[in-house]
Image (cartoon, rainbow, N blue to C red; front, side):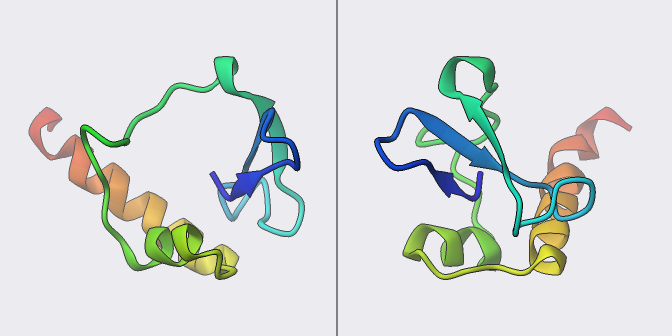
Length: 77
């Protein structure tokens, strides 16, 4: 998630490759599956930047998603 629309009704999503940070896709909250949250926080430099409201690059976002995927698939291989 890269942000929220004004009013907080929809989330803005990007992956840094197919969907760039400059043009995130707006999705309703109910249509999103949360993979990391308060009970399972994910710490990465790009995530910290987003939480502080600092812009991230597509490269940073791709690296954060790759690291998240690697961390969460180690036990499945």
